[in-house]
Image (cartoon, rainbow, N blue to C red; front, side, top):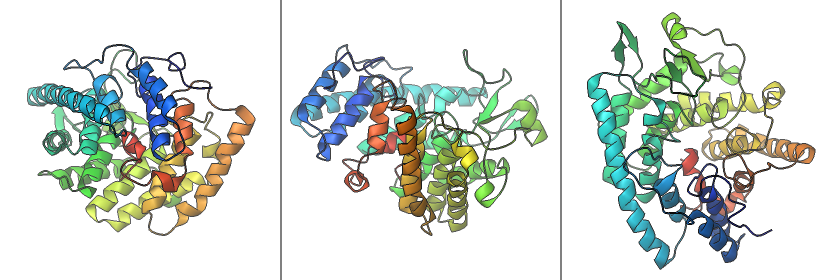
Length: 385
C-alpha cells in the first residue's frame, strides 16, 4: 500500500509519531535505491498538510520546524534546498530563544527540567540538527550551555548534578526531582552530543571536562562490572543523598532507557576522550546485555524507541567502532531475535518512526547502504558517531 496522509498518524510535523518520521523513511530508502519518488511525495504532502510550526519556544528536534528541517537534510533538490534554507533560519531563532531561557535559568540558580536539555524536546536535540547542517556557531552555543549544565549545583544545602530535573506534570518521576539516565530524556543524550561533536571536530572550552564529569556520574551509579554492568533509568533525591539505589537488576534493553543507549553514549565518550578503557567497558556492558536472555525477554515490541529495532540499531553503530569484534559477532544473533519476534507477534500496528514500522524498516536497511553522510539517518537517535 502506498503511503497516504491517512497513514501518517499523529501530528504531521512529528518526527516521533507523525508524517515527518514516515517521510524520513521513504526519503532515505529513495537515497539508497530501495524506495520510489511517489512514496516520498505522498508522505511529504502529509507532512506539509498544515502550516509548519516555528514558534520561538517549545519546539525540539522531534516536532515542528526542526523535525521537518531534519528530514529535508536527506533530500537533494533545488526546491527542498530553498525550503530548508528558510527553515534553517527558523530553527536558529528557536535555538537562540531556547538558549536565552536556559541561560536565564542557570543564572537564577533554579533546577532544570529535562525538556530544557534532552534529545527529544530540548537543546541536545536542536544540537543534533545543527551538527547535521554544519551550523558551527549555533552548535557551539549549545555545547557551551551543556558544559555549564554539567557543573554541580547546590540546592537546599545539598550538592546535586547540574542536570538534576524537577518533575513535570503527567510524568511518573518523583516530586522532589530526579537524575535521569536515559538517552532520550536524560543526561546521556547531552553526553552523546558532546562526544559526537568532538569526533566531528566541534569543540568549546570545558567540553572534555563536561564529558568526563558526566561519565564519572554514570560510573558512580553503575551496578556490576564488565558484562554484568547496568544502570537505573533514574534516581530520586533520597537515592542521591544515600549514594546508592535499591533498584535491582537490569531494566529493559531499549534505546530510550537502558544499557544499549547508555553504553553507546559511553563508547562515543571513550572515543572522544581517547580513553580506550572507558570505550571497552562500554562495549563489554552492551555485549553482556545482548548475551542475557532475561534482559532480552523484557523487550515486548519491535519498535525503535523501546523495542528490538532500537537495540539492533544501537548495536549496529557500536559494532562499527568497537575494539575487539565481539558486538559484530553478536549482531546476527540479535537480528535473528528480531525476526523471531516479528514471526510471533507481527510488526507494530502504526506506520510511525519511533513506535511503528518506519523505524523498524530503517533499522533493517542494508548496513552498507546507510554508511554515507547522505544516508546515515540515525543522528536523530544520537547513535551515529
